[in-house]
Length: 260
Image (cartoon, rainbow, N blue to C red; front, side, top):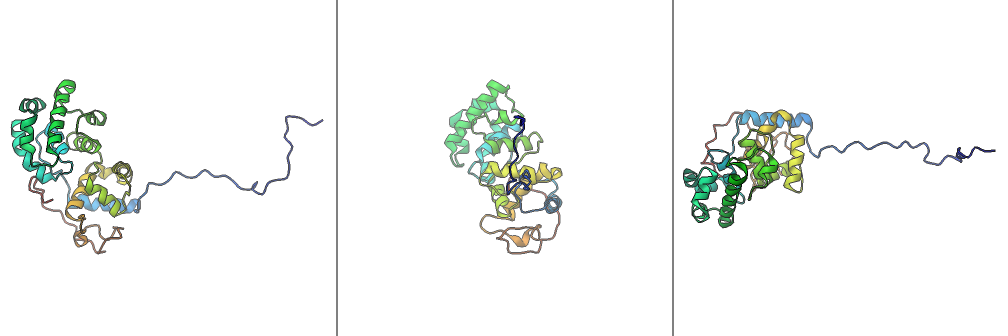
């Protein structure tokens, strides 16, 4: 009598010799090898050893305000408006004492200034009420502040607290897609990919290098490939030169006088 626990074995199927293999994890989307990425950021580090953001500020609070005001505005335009503002209101309490109407008067040359003034007062109130007037040092807490999104939080964490972040602005979003370094359909997608493809030793300064490269060399209207130190490595279909510019250290940045 056949053992009921044993299944009868029929003819082998045509696919019996096919070994099912687990698909490897998808590689991070980039057009560059590890060695090419290392070289790109090595050259940026030679060109600008200590890159800096170009928004004027005096402390973490004024940095939060400046970055929040820079949405849909140029750094130069924000600096022009905030110089006088920060002289009279460089803490959350001083900003509250100034009041929304006076804040509007200081920043009225900036786009969307009415809504931004409202946010500046609201975030100042939250800092006073919930954080003892101090800017928090975590992403989760920063994005709770009115007018502070993911990009603003990343800028503050990097510039105020020395954390390695990737603040994806219009320049970085354009560069990541144009040169195919970390293409993505949204800023969050680009941010996640850049955090994976940028070599770890260069990550802290990477977002400033990419912003400055996009602002002064790989410009929106026409990339100046003849001035680009990575022209020979670049895989952009738009590039007009394969000859890299001389790799020399640039003059120190003059914050507040940047040409947008």
